[in-house]
Image (cartoon, rainbow, N blue to C red; front, side, top):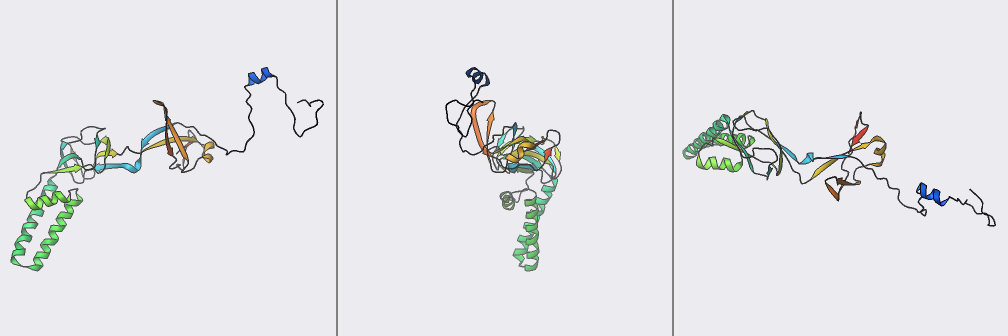
Length: 242
């Protein structure tokens, strides 16, 4: 630092750097400005299913799978699409009980026995409720009531629209009540799980903006926001997921 000769003293010093040195050091100059302090955090991430839009399709009653409408993983389905047909002896027995209860109620209604008629009506409603709890739709029950015919198979329908990401069902397979058959995920919204180092955690919070770049789509950025910062860290990598 050298003081300029012949000039008045100023409250700052003047620094002289050789032009060659400036070139070698890659010095850049800019005016001092008041600006918001921004920190950009770059992290590797993986695209994952949005857990809020996933559904497991399970067998509501035990039986044998006789037909698959969706027979491989990756099929896109709409809400209400048939997935499989299940043969269940318990289901057939309950339908027979419903038909018998309906016939009994009809005979008692003709006889005019009000007390017995109320008991028969309660039995009909209880049998219908059992079928509903086993996944039989109201339209299917109404059809049984009209036709008085037992349906040998129960159709399992998709509870949501999306992509089948897991399939456990096979034709001829015997399944138990509650056994998982399919997993369906709605991919219209996805999560991006990023790993952030612990020293960067003070800079992240819920709701802050985020951008994602994909190596196979260069030049395009997908915008989103931080939905949640997980309250625990990986003890090996010292990172937390957001």
